[in-house]
Image 1 (cartoon, rainbow, N blue to C red):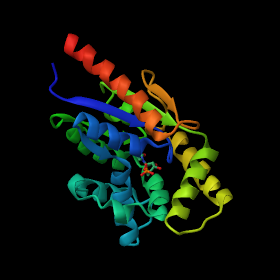
Image 2 (cartoon, helix red, strand yellow):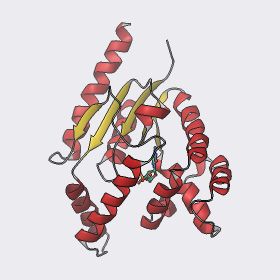
Image 3 (cartoon, helix red, strand yellow):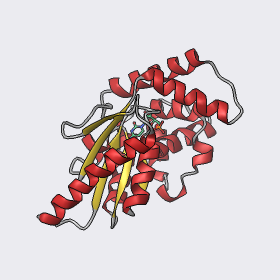
Image 4 (tube, protein in one colour):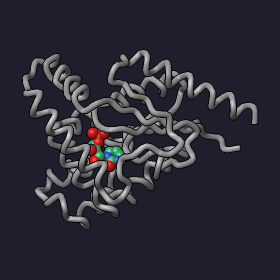
Length: 216
Ligand code: C5P
């Protein structure tokens, strides 16, 4: 029996998967990897050196140099880096390099919660539990606006919604590892759900999987 336990969480930007991943990792004492940060780190490196985002060989080199232990969320969370990340994420060689690192992370005991776009379909197809967390684009845009306003910023809802729809289209429409639910993923629509309710639903699914594994 494998000695690690893996929870795969996928879904579009702003659906609440990051918060859910953190809560599950804390609760079940698992390692945590936000794989979006790995694509953001590649994009950040390209922007820093003024390299075009479609320069596949430079992006692959940057991807191979990413250290999963040194991902600076503060620096990488900037909106423009997220947009650039979805552009380098279409490059197959970048995906291969990052997926290798993500798989090694998942295999490290006691196991991990990984969140992203292709965890249940490509990175960890044998994950013990797969969740696909979603919400309507409008709800996700409203949440993003509330976050910005809470930090004292200002933005236009229509602009945020347009950004979200553009990023969804790029992530779902790309050829390599598009965003889609794994056939065996549990769907969690958080449009009308608060984070506590989503967490309790996910926790119950993980406990069932743990019980099944202990019974084997
Ligand atoms: O989740 P986050 O907004 O940080 O992700 C930034 C971008 O990185 C996504 O829009 C997506 O294009 C890419 N990504 C990906 N596969 C993952 C995680 C993120 O393609 N597993």
